[in-house]
Image (cartoon, rainbow, N blue to C red; front, side, top):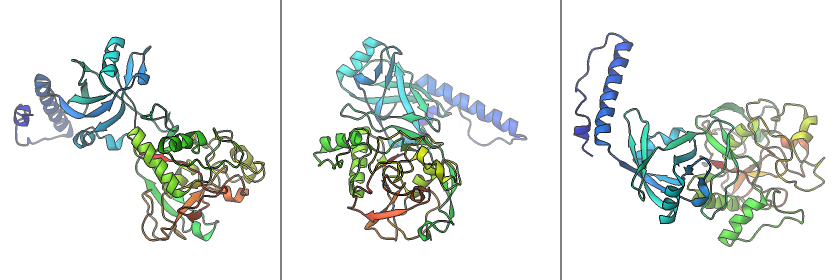
Length: 381
């Protein structure tokens, strides 16, 4: 691209401005001049690659959802994709054009043209000789979405968690829940709406040839997977990342507690009344000594189910005996501590109600994961 020619309408040097209004007006003039120059040249820049799949074409709406966009580094920075959480990325395409696109081959080069104020003008897909308006839909907090898998299935349902601050830990709890400290999560992230089920995990096992974990005779399907280790959780996260093109991982302890509290400061996400536990959790008093299908109890305010009870959930961090020196930015605490152990959160079907508290922590060996612990819930950036 001839950037010198592109910027030629813009006068070099800085003008003196008496007011903010004059500065804003001059800024708008420069933006307009840049856009006019860009429009005249209609420069198409390769932004990455995209996968097209027949199953993602909405015939009635005439919308083609784009799957697994691999953005080039420059386009990711320029479009500020690291500061937004995108839902559907789509183009309007007539049925005949859609058929031509996905029958020619799924992988396409994605080109875009841009304006100076960072807005996309058009998208261009190699394989059909025309441009398409590209729609990037930004998710709002609380929205639920699923990523398509390369093998034709769907990933777990995910909920967008809003950025924010909270007090992590409990002064009234165990020593490993102290000291209480403020954590600020300055980014949006998504967390699986339900604990990872046997259906989710068995698909992974079948695709990778791994042995399926036992269900203790309670049933599989929509029951939460049990008896998986931290290493199993890492492997499943990596498989989902490869299948979807999006970064899945085990949550950090801070992300998990923030999501569990869902804006509350009480012992449980539903308040301090332990007698309400049965409305939100499967635990020793109501579980019948076994797990239950996910989503049968009430969700918390973020729309997450079974954050209390059912199964313990593995987290990314290494195990620390307390919060002295813990990160305050939501990141996983990977330095120091005991790297042979990792935290689990949430309590389970076999534990009593005090173990359901938001701040409760447990830990187990990396390869551990008996029926009393070793379930999963994932985060995605």
